[in-house]
Image (cartoon, rainbow, N blue to C red; front, side, top):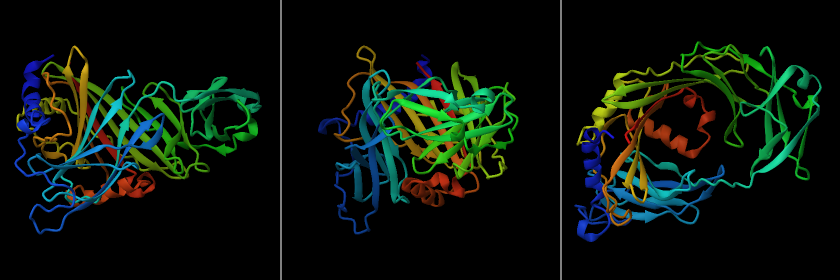
Length: 437
């Protein structure tokens, strides 16, 4: 571990954390208030709404989470909880500038830890949307179904059948909440494709496929030249299920075609992804660049340019890690970027392997304040060490990127269904990850 690089960042965030956990260490400069109180200020209080959800086995359930309200300097000026439906809606304490939602999560290794989700600069916001706390479960109650292909006819003879981009076998697992099976059939030469939507039988564990099921003709989508470490993809969005289906991939080395199925999915997309790695101050930084384009019913589309990956960005990320004031400015990386989401994974005790993760969302330039949480988040007793630092820069091409304009876009996203709206078609992002352990 490169402790020199970590020292300023960990020190700055540790300062914020040591303000938590009790009255003796509470450095708040503002008398804590509750939502709706104005602390003697006659200004109209801001009203905001949000929902906390536990995400397990691809099912959302309401979650009672803690909410902390922060002032301009990051001090805790009040707290609340979401209700039994995971909802909070009401007035904020006067002076609220930032907000954090805290809950417990379980990862795929069955490790439990605290997740902190912080939204900076919320003064222009009305609806903060959904905050997810994932709880991984190895047993989701998925059941095995046998696939009967005896009546597939020419589909079996001339096509390969795929489910979620993987070639179909003689068994599939159907999980709770899944009502339909989405399949594609593509010829060996990749010049024709068909799709099928199969209802999951309720009285049998056998899914019978027939040639007639594949009644939706595929429309070919032109593939852009990909980078050596990249790929292209198509997918259709099922609005009623809020999920992508018919996902296909073409790698750099492949020459296969891609298809969409407009008679099934009204909203179809072409995606390009590029991946690279670089070294910055002896730390390996991984990059993923992503661009999404809306595809018309005839397969045509206007390509959305991939965000450029520059090796200098790795050094910019490490420069932020060395900045004790936590200042950053990524506004010149791509004019389409309007939002940044910082991700931290902290190890608190190496012996007990305890940790907490912290995501902080805000603009592409600014400063992360010394956020504190009052008595909501207990003060770590052991030394806090940053193991991983990530940064997601993203935006939607064609939209204004100033804070006030983008607040309206964020409120639309919070309402749901934004993927079907044209102003959200040209989604782009650049993701950076530095493993510091």
